[in-house]
Image 1 (cartoon, rainbow, N blue to C red):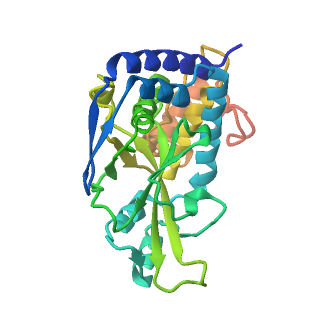
Image 2: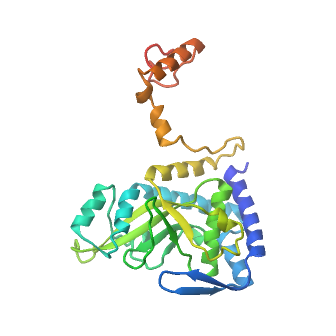
Length: 314
């Protein structure tokens, strides 16, 4: 039996290929850039070749790509910094990191990670967009501090320009389209690096920060893929916990039962309000206990005397 994810990807590939072939025109597209005005000539052959590369008709192969992308992101979440620390680092507007700035970033929940010649994520690579296996999905976007004037607002939102080629521009729209089709925010990583003022040794002279980000405000781009082909991605830095929720939602789409629906977790404030510690021995808690006793309900776990009818605890 096909999984929910398989069916959604099958539908997404068919629809996106059809729309891209119909809406993308053979013309010159202009890409706004902080330092210059780039232009890309798009041909029908380039569009067809790009579609074969980023959203292949072999859905089984592509579903494996999605799972690989998911695991790559999941493995890096523990190394991610907080949104506040990432914004502080972004606002430094300097290629070098001094000890005072480093201490401030770490105090705000930042993680400064050393250069690593095995992982591309932790290397000083000029390529801005980091792709997943088989180059079908965007895994990360790289930002070399001091080189651009990109803006990161108070809510952690920023834009990231597409590569100046047909496949790169279509891949941005494809990631947005997947977010809509799957009903789950598209998740990627934002990467920054800095030179260290005092290298640990001759080799370790750069440190990195990464943070999870989601694609936002994409509906206007999907209204006409051709008209929006050269548009940037709009991204928002999020917390590690929010990224983990998105990954669990993606996990749920691997189910084969079509009646199982992915559901977002409770908002943090609501979860805290109704947590066991908050409602136990309160008026709200006493009402729940009274209702449980009157209806013969039992606790499913061990908090209430191993599942016995609650007498003194929720």
